[in-house]
Image (cartoon, rainbow, N blue to C red; front, side):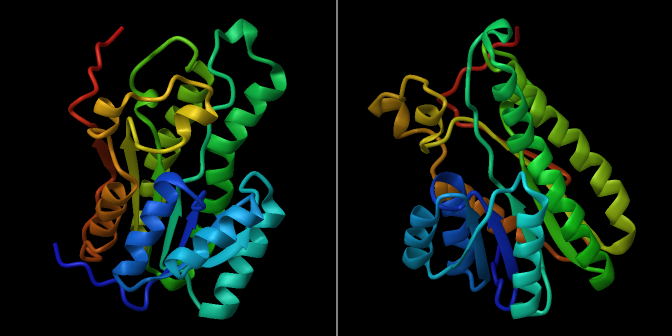
Length: 243
């Protein structure tokens, strides 16, 4: 697919590393103007410098931070073409009776509520434009089940259902809405979740940030009269056995 994203204005959340950085880098390579967000200012500015993106420090779980992001983007660019809700994290992968209340709340907030807050604001802008694309990043944990992943999986399943409703709401305004569901990725996610890192043989065969970045660019390059509501990306090296 020919990718030409010149003059497109894009926001990518959680883009200081991992999938978010790969997505932002691919979008920049294909001509888009890319605003990236994350909470860690140092990491965010370093990432922005590497890929020639525009950094905005923000916590996606805070509505006023989202307001600041949207106000800056529209003030500088006059529009918003694409929102990529990539930010997410797993904080405590353990049995539910061992998960602290604050961790449960934070997991839901980061993986579900934060994206909803962003979609709410993006929808208001895009409905006036009568064009735009919103892509929400889910996880295979929304479909399959493993011990310790209950709260994270519930949050991502909620995000997928929210995205379905969003598609129906925004379709009459010519706004494309997609839920992208990846699995094992070559990112720091496992370390952040305090999981055993992949060995080198598996690591070579899982999803690379630039690979998912190229896929996102393909989605963003679709003709305006087409949409991909749901797309799942799995590495063949991962064996998934239903419970």
